Amino acid sequence: MEQGSAEWLQARLGKATASRIADIIAKTKSGWSTSRENYLAELVVERLTGVAYDSYVSTAMAWGTATEPEARAQYAFVADIDVIEVGFVDHPRIPMSGASPDGLIGTDGLLEVKAPQSATHIAALLGEPIAGKYITQMQWQLACTGRAWCDWVSYDPRMPDYARLFIKRCHRDDKMIADLEKAVEVFLAEVDDRTAQIRALGHG
Figure 1 (cartoon, rainbow, N blue to C red):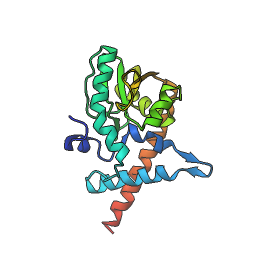
Figure 2: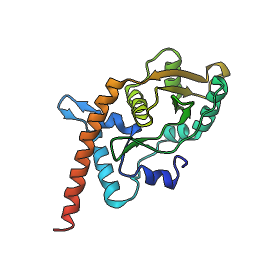
Figure 3: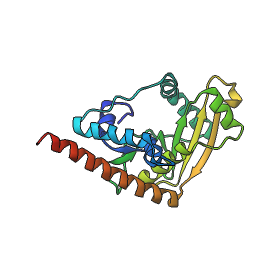
Figure 4: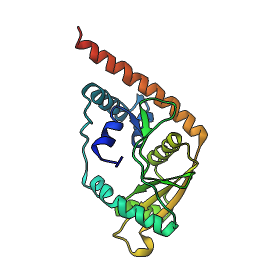
């Protein structure tokens, strides 16, 4: 299925997905963050209504989505490898969770593409570490697909040719994956419980 299609939206409805794993584990000094509670509520709404939650798309996010195919093609050309597009991949063990990698590479690899603002891309070129939210996103993708590594790509077509593409390989971290899986299971149990509580209101 094509990412962004109605079929893809239906496949991931009410499920914990890779791009939001950072929200699931986000904490403040006083406990869980607001972003975790908001995401929990989004999944409850999706499960109750059967309709994808209408999240805000900023100009930067729209730019990233529109630029992704070009970035994928540039990566495939520079790396001289085939990238197979994929839809939604369910986690093999944890129901109601999964991931949508930007591509499959060979038998062991994945691709995660970002087309960020130029300042962010320049920072990557100059050695800025990959943001934690992207690390957890990639590790969850590796957990869902059983693969060994993910190439993280930052792409900015506004830059000169030699500085448009940045590639960094992120290897599977089984310890991190195990911790994330535990956190997701706890989170999904809360989603189940909250959904059940709301449904009960309709039968009172």
